[in-house]
Image (cartoon, rainbow, N blue to C red; front, top):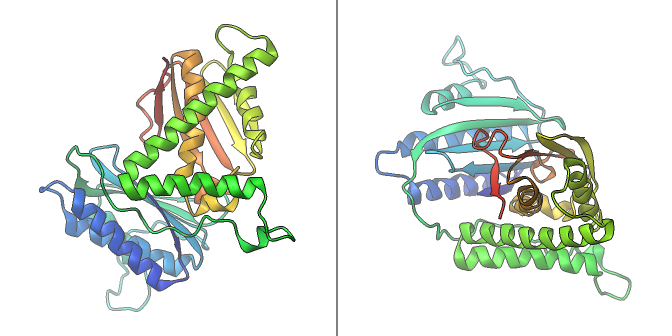
Length: 316
Protein backbone atom coordinates (compact mmCIF):
# COMPACT_ATOMS: atom_id res chain seq x y z
CA UNK A 1 0.00 0.00 0.00
CA UNK A 2 1.30 3.43 -0.96
CA UNK A 3 0.12 6.85 0.17
CA UNK A 4 1.15 10.33 -0.94
CA UNK A 5 0.70 13.33 1.32
CA UNK A 6 1.46 17.01 1.35
CA UNK A 7 3.58 17.42 4.47
CA UNK A 8 2.85 21.14 4.62
CA UNK A 9 -0.82 20.42 5.29
CA UNK A 10 -1.40 19.35 8.92
CA UNK A 11 -4.90 18.14 8.07
CA UNK A 12 -3.50 15.78 5.43
CA UNK A 13 -1.10 14.29 7.97
CA UNK A 14 -3.95 13.75 10.46
CA UNK A 15 -6.11 12.13 7.78
CA UNK A 16 -3.33 9.77 6.74
CA UNK A 17 -2.64 8.85 10.36
CA UNK A 18 -6.28 7.81 10.72
CA UNK A 19 -6.29 5.99 7.38
CA UNK A 20 -3.23 3.88 8.20
CA UNK A 21 -4.58 3.23 11.70
CA UNK A 22 -7.91 2.04 10.26
CA UNK A 23 -6.09 -0.21 7.79
CA UNK A 24 -4.07 -1.82 10.57
CA UNK A 25 -7.15 -2.35 12.75
CA UNK A 26 -9.01 -4.05 9.90
CA UNK A 27 -6.26 -6.57 9.21
CA UNK A 28 -4.22 -7.07 12.38
CA UNK A 29 -4.37 -10.43 14.14
CA UNK A 30 -5.85 -10.41 17.69
CA UNK A 31 -2.45 -10.74 19.38
CA UNK A 32 -1.08 -7.62 17.64
CA UNK A 33 -0.03 -4.52 19.58
CA UNK A 34 -2.26 -2.06 17.76
CA UNK A 35 -1.77 0.68 20.31
CA UNK A 36 2.00 0.52 19.90
CA UNK A 37 1.72 0.46 16.11
CA UNK A 38 -0.56 3.50 16.07
CA UNK A 39 1.84 5.40 18.33
CA UNK A 40 4.70 4.63 15.91
CA UNK A 41 2.66 5.73 12.90
CA UNK A 42 1.60 8.94 14.64
CA UNK A 43 5.16 9.85 15.65
CA UNK A 44 6.62 9.16 12.20
CA UNK A 45 3.98 11.19 10.37
CA UNK A 46 4.27 14.01 12.88
CA UNK A 47 8.00 13.96 12.18
CA UNK A 48 7.20 14.84 8.57
CA UNK A 49 5.63 18.15 9.58
CA UNK A 50 8.80 19.03 11.51
CA UNK A 51 11.41 18.10 8.91
CA UNK A 52 9.63 18.04 5.56
CA UNK A 53 7.10 20.79 4.83
CA UNK A 54 6.41 19.40 1.38
CA UNK A 55 5.93 16.10 -0.44
CA UNK A 56 6.14 12.88 1.56
CA UNK A 57 5.18 9.24 1.05
CA UNK A 58 4.24 6.28 3.25
CA UNK A 59 4.59 2.68 2.12
CA UNK A 60 3.21 -0.27 4.09
CA UNK A 61 4.58 -3.72 3.25
CA UNK A 62 2.90 -6.74 4.83
CA UNK A 63 4.68 -9.43 2.81
CA UNK A 64 6.49 -10.53 5.98
CA UNK A 65 4.81 -11.72 9.21
CA UNK A 66 4.97 -8.20 10.65
CA UNK A 67 4.00 -5.02 8.82
CA UNK A 68 6.87 -2.80 7.65
CA UNK A 69 6.20 0.92 7.37
CA UNK A 70 8.54 3.24 5.44
CA UNK A 71 8.08 7.02 5.46
CA UNK A 72 9.97 9.02 2.83
CA UNK A 73 10.34 12.81 2.94
CA UNK A 74 12.28 15.51 1.10
CA UNK A 75 13.00 17.70 4.09
CA UNK A 76 16.25 18.89 5.62
CA UNK A 77 17.06 15.47 7.05
CA UNK A 78 17.75 14.50 10.66
CA UNK A 79 19.97 12.24 12.72
CA UNK A 80 18.84 8.88 14.06
CA UNK A 81 19.05 9.60 17.79
CA UNK A 82 16.44 7.41 19.50
CA UNK A 83 17.15 8.63 23.01
CA UNK A 84 15.50 10.89 25.54
CA UNK A 85 16.92 14.36 26.21
CA UNK A 86 18.76 14.88 29.50
CA UNK A 87 16.03 17.22 30.69
CA UNK A 88 12.75 15.40 30.19
CA UNK A 89 10.77 18.60 30.76
CA UNK A 90 12.76 20.73 28.31
CA UNK A 91 11.17 22.03 25.12
CA UNK A 92 12.30 20.65 21.78
CA UNK A 93 12.27 17.33 19.96
CA UNK A 94 14.17 14.11 20.36
CA UNK A 95 11.46 12.05 22.00
CA UNK A 96 9.62 10.83 18.91
CA UNK A 97 12.24 8.43 17.54
CA UNK A 98 12.89 7.14 21.06
CA UNK A 99 9.21 6.26 21.39
CA UNK A 100 9.13 4.66 17.93
CA UNK A 101 12.25 2.58 18.60
CA UNK A 102 10.70 1.22 21.79
CA UNK A 103 7.32 0.20 20.39
CA UNK A 104 8.72 -1.22 17.12
CA UNK A 105 10.63 -4.40 16.41
CA UNK A 106 13.40 -2.40 14.73
CA UNK A 107 13.94 0.99 13.11
CA UNK A 108 16.36 2.39 10.53
CA UNK A 109 16.92 5.94 9.29
CA UNK A 110 18.62 6.55 5.94
CA UNK A 111 19.39 9.73 4.03
CA UNK A 112 17.97 10.01 0.52
CA UNK A 113 20.30 11.07 -2.31
CA UNK A 114 18.00 13.93 -3.22
CA UNK A 115 17.85 15.16 0.36
CA UNK A 116 15.43 14.17 3.05
CA UNK A 117 15.15 10.88 4.87
CA UNK A 118 13.61 7.42 4.80
CA UNK A 119 12.55 5.99 8.14
CA UNK A 120 11.62 2.29 8.16
CA UNK A 121 10.11 0.47 11.13
CA UNK A 122 8.76 -2.99 11.85
CA UNK A 123 5.35 -2.44 13.41
CA UNK A 124 4.25 -4.79 16.22
CA UNK A 125 1.30 -6.16 14.25
CA UNK A 126 0.80 -9.44 12.40
CA UNK A 127 -1.80 -10.21 9.76
CA UNK A 128 -3.94 -13.28 9.22
CA UNK A 129 -4.12 -14.58 5.60
CA UNK A 130 -7.02 -12.94 3.79
CA UNK A 131 -7.99 -11.21 0.59
CA UNK A 132 -7.88 -7.42 0.80
CA UNK A 133 -11.21 -5.64 0.22
CA UNK A 134 -10.19 -2.27 1.61
CA UNK A 135 -11.64 0.90 0.20
CA UNK A 136 -9.20 2.86 -1.95
CA UNK A 137 -6.78 5.28 -0.37
CA UNK A 138 -7.12 9.00 -1.01
CA UNK A 139 -5.85 10.01 -4.45
CA UNK A 140 -4.73 13.28 -5.91
CA UNK A 141 -6.11 13.79 -9.40
CA UNK A 142 -4.22 11.99 -12.16
CA UNK A 143 -6.24 13.62 -14.91
CA UNK A 144 -4.40 15.87 -17.40
CA UNK A 145 -3.44 19.20 -15.86
CA UNK A 146 -4.94 22.36 -17.42
CA UNK A 147 -1.48 23.50 -18.57
CA UNK A 148 -1.18 20.35 -20.70
CA UNK A 149 -4.08 21.48 -22.90
CA UNK A 150 -3.40 22.45 -26.51
CA UNK A 151 -4.44 25.86 -27.88
CA UNK A 152 -7.65 24.32 -29.22
CA UNK A 153 -8.57 22.98 -25.76
CA UNK A 154 -7.79 19.32 -26.51
CA UNK A 155 -5.23 17.08 -24.85
CA UNK A 156 -2.49 15.10 -26.59
CA UNK A 157 -2.30 11.33 -26.84
CA UNK A 158 0.39 11.06 -24.15
CA UNK A 159 -1.65 12.95 -21.55
CA UNK A 160 -4.78 11.00 -22.42
CA UNK A 161 -3.21 7.53 -22.30
CA UNK A 162 -1.28 8.27 -19.10
CA UNK A 163 -4.46 9.40 -17.37
CA UNK A 164 -6.36 6.42 -18.78
CA UNK A 165 -3.93 3.91 -17.28
CA UNK A 166 -3.96 5.60 -13.88
CA UNK A 167 -7.73 6.03 -13.76
CA UNK A 168 -8.32 2.39 -14.75
CA UNK A 169 -5.97 1.21 -12.00
CA UNK A 170 -7.78 3.37 -9.47
CA UNK A 171 -11.18 2.13 -10.66
CA UNK A 172 -10.08 -1.48 -10.09
CA UNK A 173 -8.79 -0.54 -6.63
CA UNK A 174 -12.03 1.25 -5.79
CA UNK A 175 -14.23 -1.70 -6.84
CA UNK A 176 -12.09 -4.75 -6.06
CA UNK A 177 -9.49 -3.61 -3.51
CA UNK A 178 -5.73 -2.83 -3.55
CA UNK A 179 -4.65 -6.45 -4.10
CA UNK A 180 -6.74 -6.68 -7.26
CA UNK A 181 -5.40 -3.36 -8.56
CA UNK A 182 -1.79 -4.40 -8.04
CA UNK A 183 -2.44 -7.77 -9.67
CA UNK A 184 -4.05 -6.06 -12.67
CA UNK A 185 -1.13 -3.66 -13.10
CA UNK A 186 1.33 -6.54 -12.83
CA UNK A 187 -0.58 -8.63 -15.39
CA UNK A 188 -0.77 -5.79 -17.89
CA UNK A 189 2.95 -5.16 -17.48
CA UNK A 190 3.80 -8.81 -18.00
CA UNK A 191 1.60 -9.09 -21.11
CA UNK A 192 2.94 -5.93 -22.72
CA UNK A 193 6.52 -6.90 -21.87
CA UNK A 194 6.05 -10.30 -23.50
CA UNK A 195 4.69 -8.78 -26.70
CA UNK A 196 7.57 -6.31 -26.92
CA UNK A 197 10.08 -9.10 -26.33
CA UNK A 198 8.61 -10.99 -29.28
CA UNK A 199 9.02 -7.96 -31.52
CA UNK A 200 12.59 -7.35 -30.28
CA UNK A 201 13.49 -10.93 -31.17
CA UNK A 202 11.97 -10.56 -34.64
CA UNK A 203 13.83 -7.32 -35.42
CA UNK A 204 17.16 -8.63 -34.08
CA UNK A 205 16.72 -12.14 -35.49
CA UNK A 206 17.19 -13.76 -32.09
CA UNK A 207 16.21 -17.21 -30.88
CA UNK A 208 16.77 -19.01 -27.61
CA UNK A 209 17.66 -17.41 -24.31
CA UNK A 210 18.50 -13.71 -24.37
CA UNK A 211 21.81 -12.77 -22.73
CA UNK A 212 21.84 -10.31 -19.81
CA UNK A 213 23.13 -7.60 -22.16
CA UNK A 214 20.33 -8.27 -24.63
CA UNK A 215 17.73 -8.24 -21.84
CA UNK A 216 19.11 -4.91 -20.62
CA UNK A 217 19.03 -3.49 -24.17
CA UNK A 218 15.40 -4.60 -24.50
CA UNK A 219 14.52 -2.88 -21.22
CA UNK A 220 16.01 0.41 -22.40
CA UNK A 221 14.32 0.23 -25.80
CA UNK A 222 10.83 -0.54 -24.53
CA UNK A 223 11.01 2.20 -21.89
CA UNK A 224 12.35 4.72 -24.41
CA UNK A 225 9.32 3.97 -26.59
CA UNK A 226 7.06 5.42 -23.89
CA UNK A 227 9.38 8.31 -22.92
CA UNK A 228 11.12 6.59 -20.04
CA UNK A 229 14.80 7.57 -19.83
CA UNK A 230 16.37 4.31 -18.66
CA UNK A 231 20.06 3.43 -18.98
CA UNK A 232 22.20 0.38 -18.11
CA UNK A 233 24.52 0.63 -15.12
CA UNK A 234 25.71 -2.96 -15.25
CA UNK A 235 24.66 -6.31 -16.70
CA UNK A 236 26.25 -9.67 -15.95
CA UNK A 237 25.17 -13.27 -15.43
CA UNK A 238 23.93 -12.56 -11.90
CA UNK A 239 22.12 -9.24 -12.18
CA UNK A 240 21.11 -6.26 -14.30
CA UNK A 241 21.14 -2.78 -12.77
CA UNK A 242 19.37 0.11 -14.46
CA UNK A 243 18.86 3.77 -13.71
CA UNK A 244 16.16 6.08 -15.00
CA UNK A 245 16.18 9.86 -15.24
CA UNK A 246 12.48 10.15 -16.16
CA UNK A 247 9.29 8.18 -15.50
CA UNK A 248 6.94 7.44 -18.42
CA UNK A 249 4.03 8.52 -16.19
CA UNK A 250 5.61 11.90 -15.50
CA UNK A 251 4.93 13.73 -12.24
CA UNK A 252 1.68 11.82 -11.70
CA UNK A 253 3.68 8.79 -10.50
CA UNK A 254 4.52 10.70 -7.31
CA UNK A 255 0.79 10.78 -6.54
CA UNK A 256 0.28 7.14 -7.58
CA UNK A 257 3.42 5.19 -6.53
CA UNK A 258 1.68 1.86 -7.11
CA UNK A 259 2.27 2.31 -10.84
CA UNK A 260 5.90 1.28 -10.23
CA UNK A 261 4.59 -2.29 -10.20
CA UNK A 262 4.23 -1.96 -13.96
CA UNK A 263 7.99 -1.57 -14.37
CA UNK A 264 8.66 -4.41 -11.95
CA UNK A 265 6.40 -6.84 -13.81
CA UNK A 266 7.70 -5.89 -17.27
CA UNK A 267 11.33 -6.35 -16.23
CA UNK A 268 10.71 -9.38 -14.05
CA UNK A 269 8.61 -11.21 -16.62
CA UNK A 270 11.18 -10.79 -19.40
CA UNK A 271 14.07 -11.85 -17.16
CA UNK A 272 12.20 -14.89 -15.79
CA UNK A 273 11.23 -16.12 -19.25
CA UNK A 274 14.89 -16.08 -20.27
CA UNK A 275 16.67 -17.18 -17.10
CA UNK A 276 14.06 -19.24 -15.21
CA UNK A 277 13.61 -16.92 -12.23
CA UNK A 278 14.00 -13.23 -11.50
CA UNK A 279 13.81 -11.01 -8.42
CA UNK A 280 13.20 -7.29 -9.01
CA UNK A 281 14.20 -4.76 -6.36
CA UNK A 282 13.18 -1.13 -6.80
CA UNK A 283 16.02 0.39 -4.79
CA UNK A 284 15.22 4.01 -5.62
CA UNK A 285 12.01 5.43 -7.08
CA UNK A 286 11.14 8.77 -8.62
CA UNK A 287 7.66 7.96 -7.30
CA UNK A 288 9.00 8.29 -3.74
CA UNK A 289 10.96 11.49 -4.27
CA UNK A 290 14.31 10.07 -5.39
CA UNK A 291 16.00 12.03 -8.21
CA UNK A 292 16.22 8.87 -10.35
CA UNK A 293 15.01 5.30 -10.29
CA UNK A 294 17.45 2.45 -9.61
CA UNK A 295 16.19 -1.02 -10.48
CA UNK A 296 18.08 -4.24 -9.77
CA UNK A 297 16.99 -7.43 -11.55
CA UNK A 298 18.55 -10.57 -10.04
CA UNK A 299 18.77 -13.41 -12.57
CA UNK A 300 18.54 -17.23 -12.43
CA UNK A 301 17.23 -17.28 -8.86
CA UNK A 302 20.23 -15.43 -7.43
CA UNK A 303 19.31 -14.27 -3.93
CA UNK A 304 15.71 -15.38 -4.41
CA UNK A 305 13.71 -14.70 -1.28
CA UNK A 306 16.50 -12.70 0.38
CA UNK A 307 15.10 -9.25 -0.40
CA UNK A 308 12.01 -8.33 1.61
CA UNK A 309 10.99 -5.69 -0.94
CA UNK A 310 11.63 -7.83 -4.04
CA UNK A 311 8.96 -8.95 -6.49
CA UNK A 312 9.61 -12.55 -7.52
CA UNK A 313 8.93 -13.93 -11.00
CA UNK A 314 9.15 -17.55 -12.22
CA UNK A 315 9.69 -18.50 -15.87
CA UNK A 316 6.86 -20.16 -17.72
